[in-house]
Image (cartoon, rainbow over all chains, first blue to last red; front, side):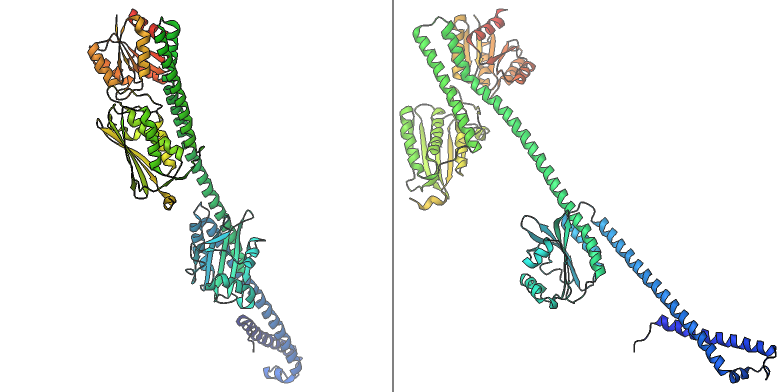
Length: 511
Length: 121
């Protein structure tokens, strides 16, 4: 038998006692009044009350009892309604406190993992101890969810473990991301088809009975996911869902803000860096233009000066011819400088693509030396080639330029009669070219600078050398584009040695 | 007849200066860098010095400073050869006590006029 509630029993019992006492008091007073008025034939004796008028007494008592019972039941009803309302209000107050606590905890611009952890620390106490709560962030680019944090007995299992990336089965996915519906499975045993697809993705969830996936949405875009699951069924009630929905909205907004703040910071950083780089480039450009202008003025001075001399001075025909030849060579030099400058610029800006094909460095060196012998009869050009040298992927014309520039430099900076040695050799994964002269040499501080455009270095007594100032920068640019390296070594007064290494690359097997 | 030291690392310009100044009868001495120029100036005690700004070892401004440091050389007028685009270089030159500046590319007449002006007084 179903026992009525305790308070109902109390009220009904009290009502019965009250009815009995009321009946007794009223009936006694009534009897006593009758007796005093002399209407009782037998006189006033309490025991006659019960003996003489049974029917009257019974009805009277029943009426009293009925009134008392109805009143008792009403009081009970009122009291229990009040209690329920108070409980409800208390629960709402708790929920509001939690919501405001969560709101405060995740309002700052925090990183997403921190937001998720702070959120879970507060929410954990409101769900059953057997439940696991996890939060994942949505990645637009890969369309996957990456776990941020989790709390509960299965928090350290995939897919909840932090950093785990999940891509959902299509059935789950379209429910979550399409209309942004919360997916609630109160008992997985009751929805075997859906559950099979979930377990297929995450075998770890096989034992889970109760499962809830709530999309976290901000500005109509998915920010992430709140997952709640339990090994027992029917653990999620409507109150809990409502509370989680409300909390989830806070979290979604916070995650969205975190993303916006991060991307805004990244953009500001990028812009600041870009700005610095632009300023640096602008200064470099200004410096460069003034250097180029200065360099170009030197041959221009010769052209202008000698043409004035031919025009204004009294000269013999031979003198005039000689100065005209000076003008001509300055004009040629200016042309070379302009061409070299344009060439270097195109190489640096990537406007020129290397035409790489398998080539033999030895062939290039031998060819350049053969050509140069005619123009430099006063120097002894000696070759020491490693005939077993593998072929390399290279741009033959550009490589000719490299060898020519290095050889011409060696000849220019060393006195007539001295030897210039060109060696090739295998050097690990590279082939190496060495150009050694016995010229004036280079002071150590200048060894790196000579590869910069228009670097002027000491050329030693009597060492008048005119060039474009761009030979070595072009060499370095070409070698770098081949993935190689070039550097100089020198003992001042005894000569310089230039080394070029070029990677053999994947063409080694080819003959 | 005066002696002129010309410090310039480009031999083509050296030749131009020699030829351009030949009718004036002045003796022209060439140096290819600042240090060689300083030694030459100590040797020949010229009446006028021309120096390029950009030179290896000792540049034009450093050379001007060295001359000012040495009492027996400090009176020699120094002409700085500059690229005319570089205004700041000219100002820098005057701070280092140079007497005048000549912008490249200069003509033969310009050079002779400058020499006459600085030696004429």
